[in-house]
Figure 1 (cartoon, helix red, strand yellow):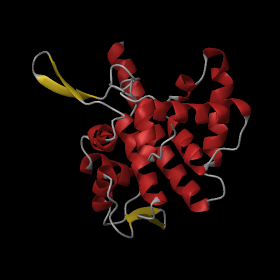
Figure 2 (tube, rainbow, N blue to C red; figure 1 turned 180 degrees about the vertical axis):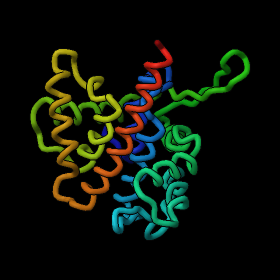
Figure 3 (spheres, rainbow, N blue to C red; figure 1 turned 90 degrees about the horizontal axis):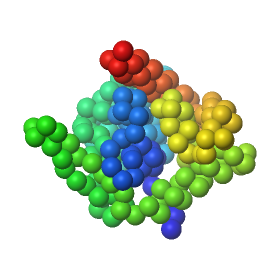
Length: 223
């Protein structure tokens, strides 16, 4: 079954471990990547405008909770870095806010755990694997066969590349070629849409910087 998803919902499904319901690759700027996806969802919905390199809410407030929170936080123009920070804050916790419609639809479960008996965490194990399977199939086709990606797929790959998640989409033997293909698609941006491509480039640059900083911090802590 193929279902319609927001970009932010698709990214969250790929980000979460199917059984554990917690993010893979801890420390890779997940919140920033998800916030970037929410901004692109707003743009696709006609609820975000780009003026002189800055992003600002436009049109009517959308109904999905993450998009509604982000739209409200962008009443004043902000550059991409400021916009992503504002969305992370407004939708906090952003994973929970994005996951809510997927939980309501029965795609994800919602479970709560306490670490050390004190700190409660929320996890989202997968209940219905069909949406993610369809999503992965589409991504794999673009990455391994050279098929021209849709605007949605190009935008998604633009976020997966800096978050270092492309390798999880294909078999080990195909990873090098898939990463090169994903980078090519991401750099080209959404096909035939100059505004989306320009906004994607801004957002991707911020996500990439955040991912690099998070990875460096994780490595320093480990050493």
